[in-house]
Length: 434
Image (cartoon, rainbow, N blue to C red):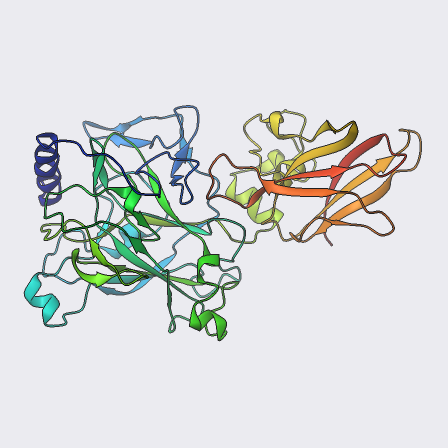
């Protein structure tokens, strides 16, 4: 049995013997808390349940639990490289940086450990563990951008026990040049030290990685980070860090004895002192807010041969690939519930439809007419992922809201456009920009 597994088993036993405590903070719980301001994002989705990880059963490596699930297609990119890895202890286990690259796995052993520091090393100013992940690999032109809602998600291997969590926390920082990093203003309301086997209340923590479950019971949830939270950071204000061109994400371990402070100057407590696989264990980081093209989307969705092309309909649900691309649908899974629909609001006709703001090569238009055999007129348009705006001389009422059940996710929008005077029919048209 590995050192990590031994430690986890011991912690679970200690917690099982402990009295449960009530969650008290204002932030999200450790898993599936969709209405919280920092709602966790599932690593896996599908018929077997949101957040249920598709993982190998150790007794038979060819058999998977939750075999019908798949990695959440909301993620458009995963880390491509790792640099500046510092492990703060001399333990050798879980020090392979490649384990932090690529998609989330839900495997608690597929992690990169940052190590931990004891009190003597902390007082002496020893460096804490950290690693920098590269999301462009030096060749890809599309970095992480500041789109609505969560822009990327960090997965650790924290796990629950009763109403609390065994969690190791970390600061998260971003950079557009690899040299200057802006740190997210984390918040910790944990009132006192919790010891090496204590339970953390995740509702007391925000904007610190590691507060969500991605471990036992086949649950896979990650911590969301919204670049908008850095708008007032001095490096962002000065233009040194460009939130529309984030290429690097750095994760910095927090030894949880209270010596390290959150964005409000309060002490941060987590499990401390840890050993074996000490400190923060990074499993993966998934980027949501990455601009994409139709060709990239087809590759990402695994379309091949006759399945490809703007007018193809490989899942035979009546929506072409181009429509599915525009509406954040799945081209190999029938999902016609996401197609546009007519609605009446106060007796006035509106059209309601989903729109993904990440496609950079799309033109989305709303057209209206007085009768199907009369000319259709464009009354609203979005170009290259931009906002949906009225088209002169028309002035339709346009509403915009998130279309995700998860509060923290905002890149998929619900657009509603009201017909202008005299129009009795509306439709949506999508086309590729030349």
